[in-house]
Image (cartoon, rainbow, N blue to C red; front, top):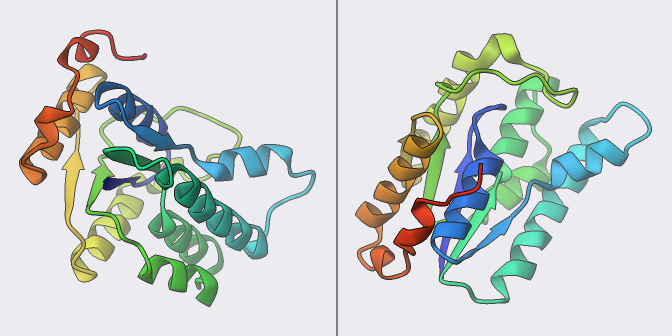
Length: 186
């Protein structure tokens, strides 16, 4: 199984790309648990909530990995939780750092900030997009994680991600359903 992280700043198309890559590769995708959690929270979130989110995100990954798909696309990861805490609170709890050290993604797709910002009540940093992108980029380089930056609008973003997967995994094209590339989900 190839386990791929879709990571990066807010409003860069992570959820859209994870779902569409799963569609064109007939794989599974782990949705972003933070959105579900925060939409149901009846108070402002705190750092303990991010720890809960991180743990549940990982549990959701394990659950879908148990299905043993050829590809598992993870919409967000522990790097997102780590950077979120560092930016919001100036530190990251050890529980999240431990989960980050356990990451076993074969590839990170770092989403570029070339998409227009889409306002959403759960998004917090429209003015920090470049700074956040650099935090992700620097962390992936520093931690020697395999990654590719994914850019492009709409279908080009998906095409660029597919090409990155084929470059990194020699047999990826065996699982690609090309007819689905023409009918990806908007």
